Image (tube, rainbow, N blue to C red; front, side, top):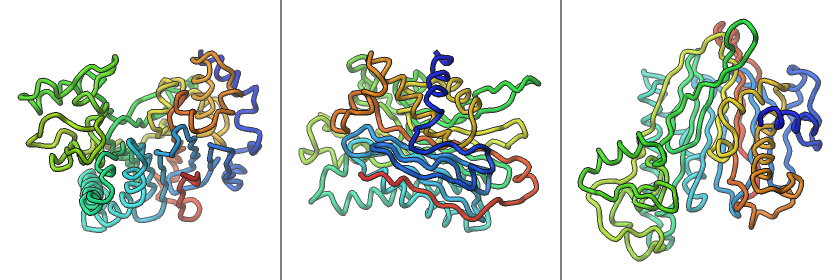
Length: 376
């Protein structure tokens, strides 16, 4: 299947013809093509303090619920965020606006960038959003059901931190052996009730609730409602005051609860970067529904850097079309009002690590700031 995907992508010129790929990596860095084509937005390649990166996002929902952000500047280093919202875009937009400023503030103290300061930034963002929910509750009660998965990567000096809430995923592509082969290593934990370990964790945390997880239409869900066990937002599953008739019936629980059902405490790993570490793919679950970790890293490894994020999205959409026994070209013609029946919003950031640059303490290019430019 991977071979067919690679042949399909190569036959189409690697990326969409609206933005021809530069001839070399260095030329691509200067080119830094940015553009959009219907429901797709991209930044093909840009230099940052950790190396180079490629970003793309395609809309599947009627209202775009995914958000992404890149900030690269001293003293933090390179920060990347993928925010996959649910029940509306409010929580994802809030996290995209506030998490990195909160991280800057948390890391401004003597500790600098650590797992503790990243956790502090996540919790400050959660508190800020819940305060917004409280203020808007009477006039806009639906905001209490909005939440978002958060996947954040921070490259500070030679250390990579990956923090996650929900089921977005970070995958490292690293060279193995002497043959130039590439291997995938998943860096992030996924907080999804379809994972046995997550169900066991929830049952241990809520021993008096036999319905803390329920199998509904073949999918495990927390309280039969939501797949993720950790998120930012989702106030109605954290504070019983929001479990009232003011929210839509599909979100309502039949009983009150005494402690939060979902958590906003992120899983955080730190990884000391090695010369064999080539790139990291940060993506919302819309990508991983259609591509395996190994397929994704081989697609990136087999082509030039420019357009890598777009190329991954294209491969995922090709798979989405194949599963529905339709042509890729026909899928791309479908309006956003019905596109969600075929694929989710998909956000991809590919960060190419320049190990020598990090080891020598050099920075490449100017400070960088990127946000998705798709209309909501």
